[in-house]
Amino acid sequence: MIVWDDVGYLRIQVKSCRIRHESDKRTPTYHFNYGMGLKKKKAARGSYDIIASVAIDQRRVLFTALDEVKAISKRISPRYFDDPDIEIDSWRHALAVVRGEA
Image 1 (spheres, rainbow, N blue to C red):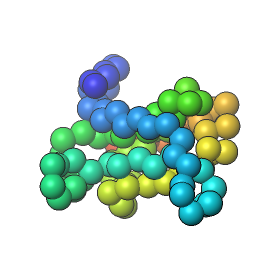
Image 2 (image 1 turned 180 degrees about the vertical axis):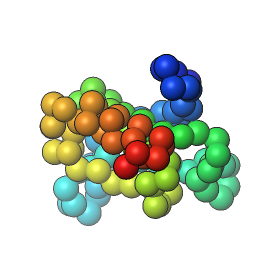
Image 3 (image 1 turned 45 degrees about the vertical axis):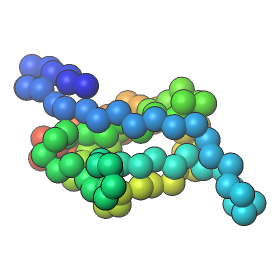
């Protein structure tokens, strides 16, 4: 996805998933895979600027600047998406990181 404003455009990679119930009785989580590629997953540096992690069940989005992604996959607690301001707060932070303001 591409978005733009008065400063310029940004490339956004959208990743979505439903809550995942683990077989070993761990707390259910969202498990996002940020890697790209068929066999060996790797982060596609330079292909996009921001990742939008969509919690389908809760209909919420967490935005993360690619520069802040440290792993190919990430588990996120469903409670994290309970914050009603998660979209605007994470968007502002990701935008500031991408633009070098954070």
